[in-house]
Image (cartoon, rainbow, N blue to C red):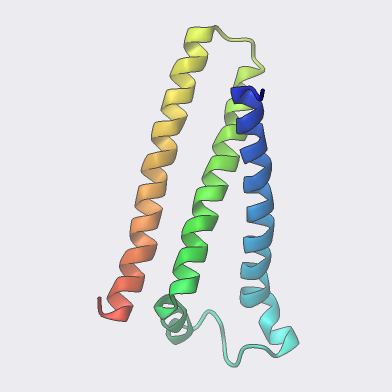
Length: 123
């Protein structure tokens, strides 16, 4: 039977793999597309950004990347703090605070991404 910590650690590793893949895609599109000739024009031009915001795939990709990055980063921070040998009560408080911060940051980031997509798509 797996413990809670090993399950959280497994999700930490999965989130790292998701970040690797999605950030790789992002880096290719944003920084290497010119080199390989897969995108015409400047990817940072406002019209290009707005065109990408119409694509639901990009919106979903950015929301999933946001979720993975927040989980991976905050869980890593939690583990670093726990290595300080703090009390069990402090560990619980820190865990709750990090979960609340993560959920708040996710909601703000996801709202921003989906609001731009919806506005551009005319939804």
